[in-house]
Image (cartoon, rainbow, N blue to C red; front, side, top):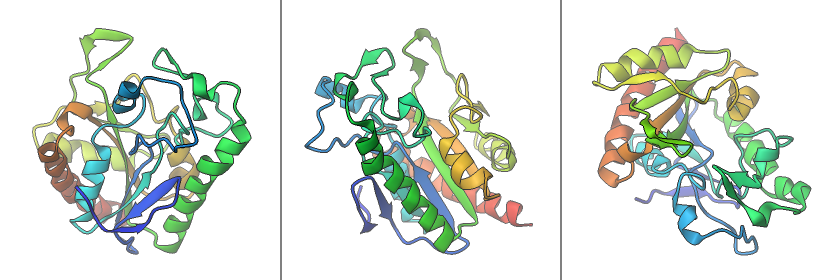
Length: 246
């Protein structure tokens, strides 16, 4: 699926036109792109797996743009630079992920990598939020049906909500998602109190309303699933935006 791209620098891309009081989708892990001058030293097949990209989120975000939202998307793989980590966190440029070594990230100039990707991403996101403040931001991720560390234990919920101190979006979203027949809960084993670099920096610190949601990746792995979730989330996000505005 394609959508009109307003801007596409190296670290991020903006799809659609942000509107004051509209809905903005933010997906840090939307791409598995690796710039040609970076060699991660891993098998190409791994770049299609969850360690490299949140499967399906770019398709959902771009489908939502057709409903009148805008989407701010990460434009490199999380293995190149994970913008949902504080830049002082070693995992911002992971030397290993999900038990797999990333040899191309060992011994590199981390400062140069952060300056090239991490800081421009956050500076651009801050600029979008300041210039066209949305009524609600959907921070969108996807998760695997089971953890690699425990493949026999399924993660049965369809989506999970995350938050740090501000749970407004999560608590308003849960009954709306459940009304669609979905199994919803606080995302486990991860927490928005730990994996919170984006929400802490851009939303909780500024009092901006947000919904931080992870969707099970098999539900959005194809175009049909992405369109279904895009329509659902557009409807739910607009409902939440009206609630938090009151």
